[in-house]
Each structure stands twice: as structure tokens, then as C-alpha cells.
Image 1: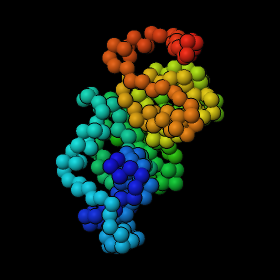
Image 2 (image 1 turned 60 degrees about the horizontal axis):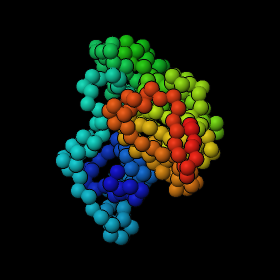
Image 3 (image 1 turned 45 degrees about the vertical axis):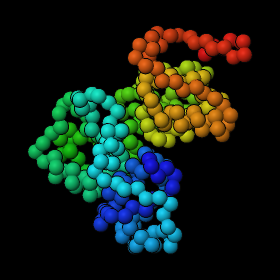
Image 4 (image 1 turned 90 degrees about the vertical axis):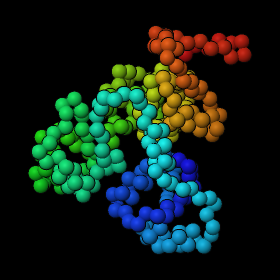
Length: 273
């Protein structure tokens, strides 16, 4: 998040597995806009700090310690709920080594019937546990294996609308088959959403439906959602099309749920949506 779209050089990590680098890269790309990073002594092009910087001095240095990590944890924890509803791992996709470790952790154990447990992986990796007979063991432990997608993108977990995988870019139709408004169109409508549901690519889908003229007239949120806000901001900056995004608090959001039509004035002329 602090790096933004720059290329960070991470120094002080003695070693990292491919799975750890995969997880780090996914988090860096979703929290910020990091497309590449160097890890000194770990990634092949960064044997030394000098190699990583190509002989140049760093633009700035950020010290990362326990307090930094605790603050990040607090910022990422956006709910006050204490009841666990689901566990979703393998986003990005689970590897064979991760399946091996998960199987060892779950021997003789089962997740609570009240908690859904999802593991996302690719179909090529999913075949190996099945061939070894682990699939039956994982199912007995309450694990549901999902292939070639992520549970926070597709309609596996119930929740707010995801533009990526949930809205058709060309038509604005809601394609999420589990959404209450499946088949309806967001085009020209005021959307009332408790929040977004990832992925970060939802920003680009929202920008595209706005560019194509099939986007919503406005979006009203029950809580802040930077992914939705970013999509609307990009559409205005690149395409000159403005879709207001507002956050409603408490009673205002509850009252808005009863609305059927909205009306706004524009230069003395009324417009309904």
C-alpha cells in the first residue's frame, strides 16, 4: 500500500519458498499496485542490494516492524463480528505442497458444521490429491475444493455484488446466479450495496461498464469500498463519465432500502433513475 505502483526492494528476509513469494506478490498487488518486487538474496536478479537497485540509490526507505504489521492487521480487519462464517484459502491458488501441509494439519480433525471451509486451486493441482485419495479425507474434514476460480469472486460465498465475475461488461447485466437480482441490469440504476466483494479487478470492470454507457447512475454504499470508488474515479478521469459514489451511514442506509425511485436535478432539469 505504501509502495503504490513503484517497484519495492525487500531487504532482511533470509529465505522464502515459492508459495511464500506467491502469497507476498498477491498481497502486494491487491493492497497496492505492485506488479514487480525484488527480494535481496531470494529473487534471482537481486543477489545483493546493489544488484536490486542497479547501482542507484533508493528513492526512500520504509522500516517494517511488529508495529507496522499490527497496524496493517487492524486496517484489514473491517468487521466487528466475532463469529467466523467461512474459511477461504488458496487465493492465490493452493499448491501441491500446501495441500500436503493442510492434510497433515487436519488429520483426525473436522471444521465446525457452522463454518464453510473452501480451498481454491487449479485443475492441474487438484488432480494430484484426488489420485492419492486425499480428496475423501479432506471432504471428511469439512473441506470443499474449488477449481479454477476464487471463492471471493464467484458466487460461492453469499454477500455483496462483485463486478468482476458478477456483472457483464458489455450489457451491465448481473450474471452472478446466486445474487438476489440475478438477470437484472445495473444500467441507469442507482445501486444500493452494503459493500463490494472484490476482487481488485472489480475496479476495471466498473470502469468499463461506465465507459460503455451501461453503468449505474449512482452507487450508494453501506460502508467504504476503495475498489468501487477507484473504478468510478478512473471512469471519470479517463472517459469523462461521472457516476457518484456515496457512503450512507446507519439510518440513512436503512431508509434507502425502501426507495423505489430517485430524483436528481441537473441545471433545473429533473432526472430519474
